[in-house]
Amino acid sequence: MYNIFDIMYIIIYFVSIILYIKQKDYGTMEKLSIEEKRPLLSLLSTLISFVAYYWYVSRLYAEKTLDMQGEIEFWSAVILILIPVFVVSKIVLMILLTTINTIITGDETRFDKLDEFGKIIDIKATRNFYHVFIVGFLIFLSSLVFSFNVFISFNIILFTILVSAIIADLSEFYYMRSGV
Amino acid sequence: MSKNFISSNIRVLRFHNNEMTQQQLAEAVDITRQTIVAIEKGKYSPSLELAFKIARVFDKKLEEVFTYEPIEEKK
Image (cartoon, rainbow over all chains, first blue to last red; front, top):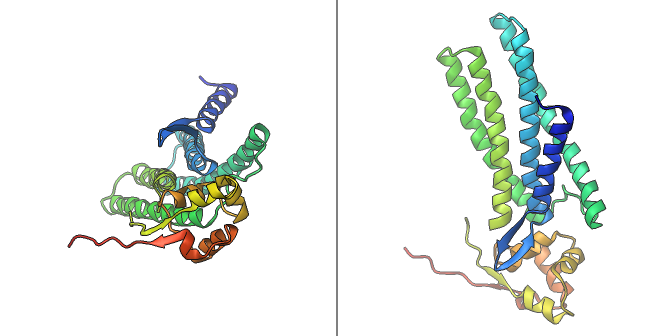
């Protein structure tokens, strides 16, 4: 079983890889810019916070014996709490990265700074988020119509949120590289 | 992906302006370096306001920095 220090080590390892990732670009090796790192790190924070949260929720669920009404209330609360978990994890990540980046490079640019190019990309990424989310939500409604298990139905919406968030981060990275 | 018909000669102008870096230009017009990179590579068409700001940095007219070249699409 992993303890908290192992998890912290893994997180720091991946963050350092992304911060110093290098790739080929027009024949020259150059670092990813802050704007390109941001969606990758956001993706990482989404995955870490979701896995940690889902692991915690699964343990809690296994300990309880719930009737139909209790299960609906439990999973509804899980989804409601997931959203602030994502928001808080991203805020904490941006503060940490800005601080780490400032200490290492001396550059005081905020990781969440957006100019007009960044705003257009943000809007397009959010649009993609909603497209995926709507599809997942329709599947969730269909599962309720066809009387699926409450556990399966609510897990569909839970994983829809995760996939939508991943799509949003990947789209942001894609638009940042390929332009709009 | 929409086609960008606006091209710029920012790279040349930077070179003739004491080899100004992308970061320096970005700071002068209050945007990120990533946006300058995208404009130079023709991956992003800047807003009219930003285009005027960039032209002003080089003390040039807008037409001397940006050119509009529509490409006839095949029917």
